[in-house]
Image (cartoon, rainbow, N blue to C red):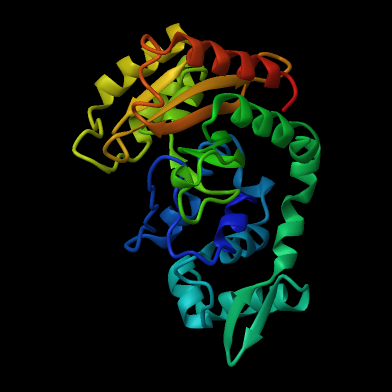
Length: 296
């Protein structure tokens, strides 16, 4: 959740991954569902008395700001979060008092202080010291943009990225950009390392959006492709986001063997062909995933 706020401070109007656009639309009919959509699986075992609703609502207010709504009035915040106006006003004024938001002519927007909320996570994951240098070296070696993402509910959030050729860099790419688990290379690589129960829940509940005519929307077929990725150790997605563009990704394990995230490359199909046709690229990506294992 924290890293979505990095993306929401972007000046771009849309958020993209390195090989295709993925625009997550809010659930306008049910703002509460939209706000909680990506975190509900992680909190399912918590009892109501174990959580603080005021704190949760404050997080929802922060999460309401994005590239489309960079500054909002109290009524807009209330409408987008599903809170009543009095609660929305108290929460956004609290953010102002703490320096996480600012007010201009009764409109509010986030301040750079929001980025401090993610600093501890970035430091703990050694993003600057370990992850970013490894991705930069991988990009230099492969000549392709290399990215690392971690699961957040039904999505994968970009944690770090090393760009390749300028023509392959998508506008608006930033830490916190979200990808769908079921129809992206990084997402399917993450899914390939989930437990059977976790994968079943994702296959049943994750939203599906057709980005191109080639996007697979058949959940059974997606499950079969994820099973193939599990067997191979690599997930390959071609033209499901953008015509002529493909992505190859590998799951990255944590110190105890759990799924920590996924690392992947993207580019035109000629540069990122199916792993059967590019064994050297497949082997190199698998090597990068092993180098990251236990370090995230």
